[in-house]
Length: 334
Image 1 (cartoon, rainbow, N blue to C red):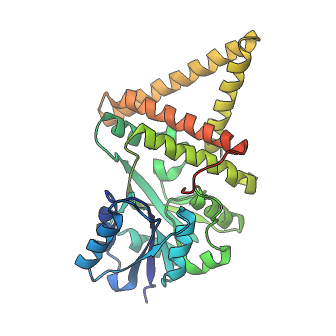
Image 2 (cartoon, rainbow, N blue to C red):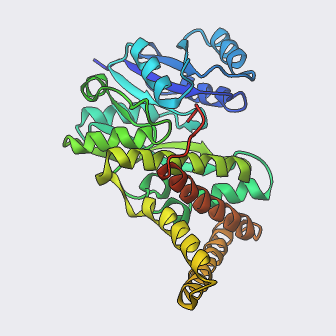
Image 3 (cartoon, helix red, strand yellow):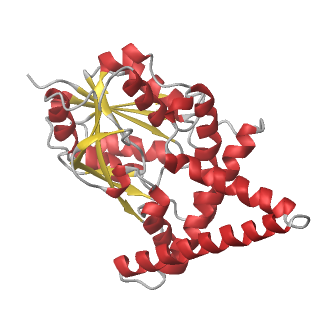
């Protein structure tokens, strides 16, 4: 017997992407009578809810339910949706994602084969807008200088990893771990997967489990996104210091080193020399990455756009981390 599956989707103001996601869920090869979709809406202020209602009316064969996420954060929405769902297996998706038709099938198969207790796949990152800046943001998000060693962004062979985006796992595991940490408004997936690994579980990435992820469309949106990442990563590390990875340590260390060297360089020449060396090396790395993105994408404009996107990602991430460390406050939504 194939297990029942609940597809869990948190959303807020996703009128431009929610229909694409729901269409992809409807097109899944997994038996539709074994699936349900539960959407936790954080009181959207655009046409997200009307779009969901219209899709539900025109696709009655897919069981759908919308619940209000009154706390307006992603982990609270996930917990709320999961509590009212009924599936034996939970598949967490994002309103910016479009899974391939075999996505649920392959997640369920990997769990049944015992590959891991949480399974996921790789992203194909696409532009979330139009124009050269949007294209550069997507290229930067998929580049090693932007993704570090996050294998779900880079691809590769099937293997155990530290985290996957939008994992699929059994309800019994969710109950055992006590759900998502609602005090962390971002990094909730990584924190959940860290607790899995800490308890001896395996996180499995299968490159045949694929989804398209729509990157942020503007540098302002990108900056806000990575500020949140850095801000809430620091809060997570205060709970789980052992969860740090080198890719997560570099942006705050770079920002701190630049600020220290800039502050002391006027009075201490070695600091000024250090500042020039760090900035020079960093700019060379940005140029190399930009040229690489342009060559891979066969688009010369990806070089300057990708460089700008990487700069925004690194500085926003590092600055958000230190503001959080110094006790700064953050908005309600993650």
